[in-house]
Length: 83
Image (cartoon, rainbow, N blue to C red):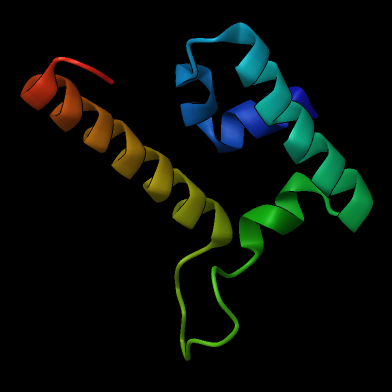
């Protein structure tokens, strides 16, 4: 299951802290078990059922948020020298 999560959300491997990375993957594993979902089902899951013709999947949304967080990190580091 870990490999499936890493394949679907490659940004998880950008988490530098190994313990935090492992805990992040564990949360996804727990959610999949609790929900009874396969990664294939999650990859088809729409981001929202409240938006008509929503063509964005939940995984695409998660990956986009990850990328935005990385961009914020870069801006803060460039502007203030911290992260």
